[in-house]
Length: 65
Image 1 (cartoon, rainbow, N blue to C red):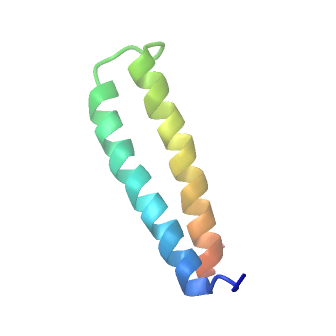
Image 2: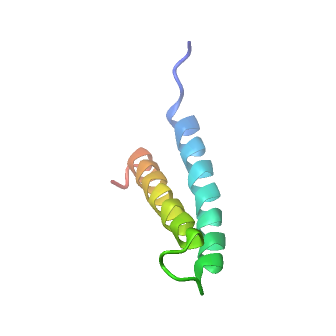
């Protein structure tokens, strides 16, 4: 099995982050006027956590962190 190049890993991480970032902003608009305990708001919080992790992974690969 060939090793995965750093460029490929960065590209994959960037795709993942971009996907979650789009979902995060869309969920934010939906959750805007809803109470904190609503399902919509829980979805928003979940996406927020996943996006944060994806961002940290991308930062680690690109040498920011």
